[in-house]
Every structure is written in structure tokens, then in C-alpha cells.
Length: 447
Image (cartoon, rainbow, N blue to C red; front, top):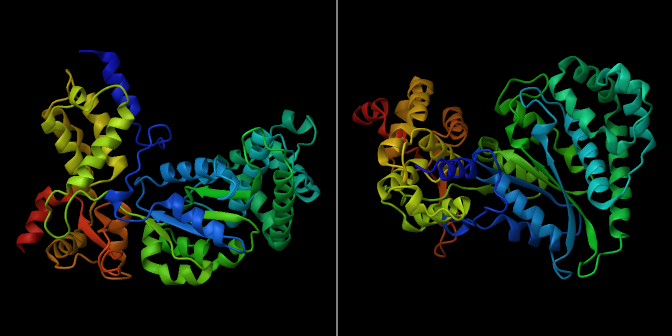
């Protein structure tokens, strides 16, 4: 066996690495509009600041889509409008189990200052932030670093990121800045205006178009599970995205906020009222027809093409037997992270190439065990009811089904097409194909 090829397959399918060069557009098989043209059109039409909400299952490909948007913004034509993208991966800054709005605001201003300096050579200066952060640095810097002198605004990025792993320092910073929230927001907007003017005044390189403005992309924000002082889960998410919406909307910049799918489905109308736009939801890649479990060939082909894009020069037929590949595609349910995880696991169980069917059987075993033991007892009947239902809809506001969306035991799809405008846009739900094979699920169906 060629170990180098197997290693290449394994590392090309990192389930937690957003696709950039290996990106493949699966929009037709998702049945929804594509994020990039949708956002770019809103951006072109909006007279004010655009606060855009983006959602979808964890691991469905949101980060990959956001990185494609980042590329599109930076390479847009003059007629489309070229924007300088600032990607803030919130997970680099905050503990998603214990978040406050102050943490997010510090992440935004730190990333913006660091990015425009690194990419454009622009040094943002703000007396308030530099003064306040230098006053607070004793909480999160070593004694040696403190004695090295004051830091410029752009130099705080790595220092602020340390707060994620230091609860004591984080609390001290919060306690100091929380009473100044109004001032904090005003000062951030002053930093935004300074960045905007500097970016627009840059001389474009030969062959490039000048920037019209900048766009903030807040990735991983949908992972928030605990907001300071609130119960974990949807209560914390509502506190941040709904109750704190006036403050988020007061930020004077074009911003994309990633929103948890369970919140988008439980409180979609309220989110629209707060932000002026419906959440844009990225559904699963459709692999089965609605209500019949008949394979949807366009979706299967899309997954093959996506996987081939990841593997590069290694052909699918050389990497997997036909039976093994079909097994992986079927039981991924169209969830890209699951597919990549199963490929890596299959590599770890393989002694020869192409990867055979028995290796893929072993690849899903941990997922089988997790679902078999972690699904609450009261969910099994509801899963069976969903599977037997004629319309494959979930009751609005049902906490059990919202948890199923979060745990991926239930997956969201959209039919797509060009027929009835209501039917093609309405999401529908299916039980995860692995869950459908479990004995507890089959027993619930019989009952």
C-alpha cells in the first residue's frame, strides 16, 4: 500500500478546516440561493449599514462559504463594488460556554486593527481604546510584557485572545468595561470611520479597483452556548442575538453575524424584526428525495465532485471501491463535516487502496455509538413521528426538535427548483440516516 497516498487522502479531508482551494459549489444540490451573490446583491442595494444573518447546521459548510465570500469581496469589479473583508473567527477569542458582549466587541476591534495593519499597512489609532487596554493589560500580560511599554491598538490581538483561557482576567476586564458599554460602542464606531476613510483613500495597485468600504465577517458566533448570567443553550443565544440586537445594530459597519440554526428556526420572525433581514440558512446537500428516501442523484454527484476536489490528483476510483464510496455518501446525509470525518476514520481502518467497504463500516462506528447512547429517551418517538409524517415538518418552538437540529439527529433540507414559490422555499426535515438504522429508532417506528 502507498502510505503517502493514504496520508494525502486523510489530510485532504480535515473536517475542521474550511475549504478554500478545495472549495466546490454545491448550491444546486442544496436547493437554496448561493450566499455570495445573495450578500453581494444586498450590499449593492443597501443605503445603510447591512447587518446580515447567516445560519445552518454546525459543520454544514458555513465557514467555507464565508471564505468564498471573503475572496469575492476582495476581488469584485468596480461595478460590483470592491470591499475589504475582515474575517473575525470568534472562536479564537471567546469561550463559547461563557460569552459576554464585551468579549465580542473587543474581538471585533482587535481583529480589525490587526488585519488592516497586516494586509494594508494601515495603523489605526484610538486614544480611548489604547488608554483603556493599556490600563487593563496587567490582567492579561506577564510582568515582563507590562514593563516593555504601551501597546498600539493593532498589537492587542494576540493579547486579547489570551483572555479566552483566563477566566479571572476575563472577568476583571468585563467588570471594568461593562459600565462603559455606551462609550465602548461609540469608540468602536470612531475606529470604524477611521478605518473606512483610510481604506477608501488607499491607492489601488495596478489592475485592482479601489475599496468602497470594509465588511466584517463574524464566523463561529453561532457556537455560543452560554451567555454571562443566562442558562446555556437557546436562552443564552436569545440574550445575545435578540436582546442585545440594538447594540449589535448600532455598530456602524457592514457585518455578517453567524446565528445558531436552532435560534433561526425558533425565532426567525423576531430576528428579522431586529435586523431587518431574514436569516440566510445554508441547508444540507440533499441526498434523498423528500419523504421517499429515494437517492437524489444531483446531490450524490455533488458530494463526489466535492470529495474529488479535496483529493486533487488522487482519483476517487483509486481512493475508494464503488461500494465504499456510496456507503460514505449515503450515511453522511449530505453533511460535509460528517463525510470528511468518515473518510479520515476509514483511512485509519485501511490496510490497502482503494479503501474497501469494511473500512467504511468501521468508520461510522463511533458515530453509531454516540447516537445510540446520547439521544434522550423522549426523542425516539418524536424521531419516528417525523420519519412517518407526510410533510416532514417539525413543530415550531419544540425544544426537543431544536435540540435534534443542534445534535444533527435531524437534518434540514430544501427542495429547490422553480415551481411553486412557497413549496420550493419551505425547509423540510429528515432523520439522520445513521439514526434511522439504530434499533431504538426501529423499535420506535414499530410502536
